[in-house]
Image (cartoon, rainbow, N blue to C red; front, side):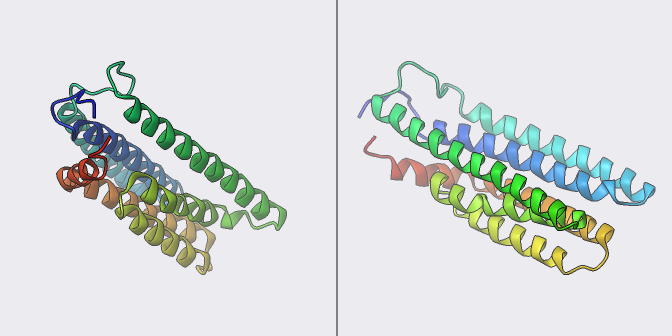
Length: 204
């Protein structure tokens, strides 16, 4: 085993900080979707919440990234085993993202084909939520199963709502909450999650 860093938790702090930012931005996007359909006063309130919460998460992620100081995935002093694991994770992640994009495209196409544009938002929400299930296994973050299940449940609940505007507002708000709760979980449990990963890769 090549000991290229003093604290072997650093790579995982680095990865978790990325996850927090992605989830924070995703939550902001979904709240923006909800706000788009909201009355003007609610739109303004949602915009303020969006800016404040997103800013707080980005700052928190930055502090977590600072804890990973001394590590960079492109560093030349990484062991070959670490490089191989990094390539495996990146390749699998790329496959998941491509499938997610294709799923979104298919969902939108079907909604338009059947002349149900009002279902586009919840259908996209289902695809986005489900893509967290394979990420839970890939990144060994079991909380992503919650993200997948809660997001899918919220989107399915939106499908049974009669009013199209209300449907988009409900789904957008619910997905924002799910994403931000998931981001908070990563921050609150960063130490534990990193320790578990170190144990998992102790032979690398």
